Structures are given as structure tokens and as C-alpha cells.
Image 1 (cartoon, rainbow, N blue to C red):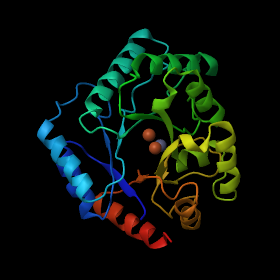
Image 2: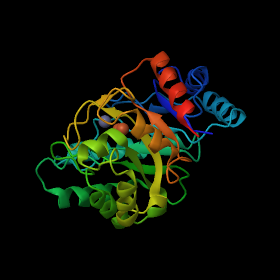
Image 3: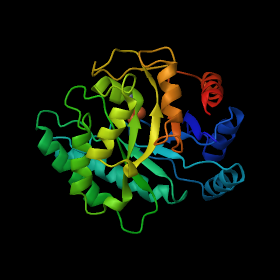
Length: 276
Ligand code: FE
Ligand code: FE
Ligand code: ZN
């Protein structure tokens, strides 16, 4: 069975997200841990979280994916920005323990002119600061398109961060199809080659989730604009190969395409139909 879901709003809590997921035949979902622009998080209702865990078990959900606010920057130049980011992520990881054993995804960040090595050093320091041996959540670095001074557009950068981290057992990678295609990894013409490269540089055992998005822009554009499945430069045939690939087919897939709930439902139905 294909494990697939989409990004949902968490403004009405976990049970509501489970219900929305079920209404579109999803068996997982992604959500922001708090307002995507950062700031104060709403307290987690333990009953809501407990009921969500029950519903997930009852309906055989795959792991769910919490996404850190995208305005955070673990490798910011300004110390107060870094501190805010690290504190927010540490707080997110405490909150994640109300739904134990799931996934937390973050953007490695932008080095804003400090250089890629400094960026990698700061991101590694962030992880060494926030990861705790007893946590049950796996923290995922998202592959990025390499726009501006983004870190994580190359597999080597992600590998360096993981290798520098003391608690690497708690780390994995979320591969975003739009981002890697925009970054110059040709998952349309050479999916096997890209996955071999991923395996050689990072290790496929680190790959824990897929963001499944088409791209509004051509190969290697370094742009990061998501498109609906089959309507962008990646195309439906490539997605059929992606969801069925032996190295990927058992991972959870998360749609972050420009859709409302019913549009996500259509994409899930279509992708389920292509899963063999
Ligand atoms: Fe993301
Ligand atoms: Fe993504
Ligand atoms: Zn994106």
C-alpha cells in the first residue's frame, strides 16, 4: 500500500488532521509545528494527541511529518536569529514527544554570505545542541533547490552535516522532488543514477520521507516553485517511476502542491492508481 498524504493546517489540532486525511484516502499527513512564520506555538492538548495516535493505529497510518517553520534559519549570521531558531526547534522536539516515533523536517538554512562551510558548521552545531539521546523523533534535513545561499542543494552538504553530528542515529533526510530537480538532479531522465548518487554520498538508509511535488520551472533552475502533480516540468510518468521505485516505494510521500483539500484528494487518487 502506498503511504501518501499532504500538507494540512494544524489550526484545529491533530484529530482534525487525521479526519481530513481519512476524507481524501490519505494514510499520513504533514503539518507545520506552529505558524509557519515562527512565533509562539499553541499548547498541545494531550487528549487530542492521544486520540490522534489511536486513529493513526486504527487506520494503519504511516509516520506523520512535522515541518519546522520555514522562516527559521539554523545557520543565520545574526546570533539572535540562530538562538531563536535553535530554541524553536528544541521546543518543537519536546512537543513532538506527544506523538512519539514520528518525523520532524527542517530546511538546513541559508548561510547568507558566510560561505557553505560556515553554514554546515552552524547547522551541525544546532543539531548537536538540540538532539537528545532519549528522543523518539527522527529529525530530517530537507534537500533544497540551492537558491540564493541555501545549504542542502547538494547531497554532499547534507552528508557533511550528518557526519558532523554527534547523535546521527536521530537524523535522516527528506527528499523533495521539486527541490532536487531544480537543484540539478535529473530524476526525470535518470532516477536510478540520482538514487545511486544519494546512496554513495549520504546512504539510502538515511532517506525517510519524500516531498512529492512537480516543479513550475525547468531542470536545474534553482527556483523552488511547486506545481501540481503532472502539470510541471517533472511530469506524471516520472512520478509513476518515483512512487514505484524499489528504493522509494515503502517510504511515506507528502504532497506540497498548490491545492486545497479536494485537489490533494484528486492527486492521491491518481497516484494510488499508478502504484503497482
Ligand atoms: Fe520544506
Ligand atoms: Fe518540501
Ligand atoms: Zn519547496
